[in-house]
Amino acid sequence: MKVGDTLVLSVPIGPVRSLASDAAELCTQALGGEAATVLEIGKKDWVKLELQRDGYQGWADSKQWQAAAPSSGASLVLQSASSSWRRSDDALLQLPAGCLVHCNADGQWALNGTEISPVGDVSSALSVFDDPVSAAQQFLGAPYLWGGKSVFGIDCSGLVQVTWALMGRSVPRDASMQALEGQDVAYGDQKAGDLAFFQNAEGRVIHVGILLAADCILHAAGEVRMDAFGEKGILREGDVTHASHSIRRW
Image 1: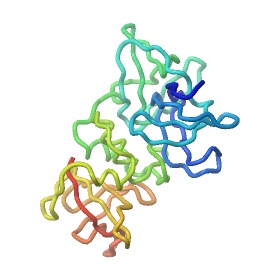
Image 2: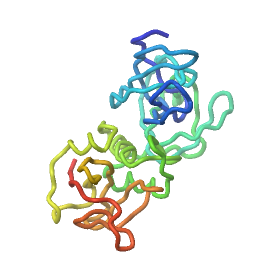
Image 3: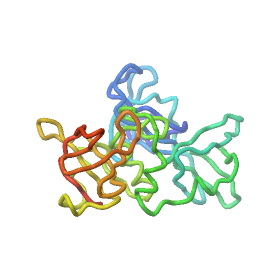
């Protein structure tokens, strides 16, 4: 392995951390089949990577990453929140939505060159969403995890990023960067599928959610949940929990 090499995540979910330590902050996650470029070789098994999907950088355990394997046939993004796959060594993998798998002309499946096979009907795992509301709602009840990007743990901007990835669109990782995308929507003109952003006391964007309707929002706060949405922000039992910043339409 050397600087500039392309590596592919060969496990279902891989942590990407702020420093080369298992105790360091989880800044994001990579999903199975995701590619990254090597920026720096650290001590022991640590390597600094730049994720090719969104340009996010951080440190990862190189044991979870392998050189990119040659592939043929179709490359497919898994759509269902989680699906079960049997690896060639008989390990049972739970692959989350957003993982990239390959299927060749003979119907053989692989995760970065390693043979896998679906457990049960694969059609539901591959049925592509055509709207963000349907894609996002399958994460309802997923626990909150700072830096998370799967149904096993997800944060607010991760929910947005994965939702749009399921529809084939690459978007920034952080809420503050997502707030710069698309067109501004005036309050009163919002509709299902719009994104609502929220700010702290200094006016900095710190939270994002997906509108399920003009007055209802899906967001990750403790868990992925539904709450009321109004002009002042997110409402829970009559109290404003997150102050409005803007509404954007992608």
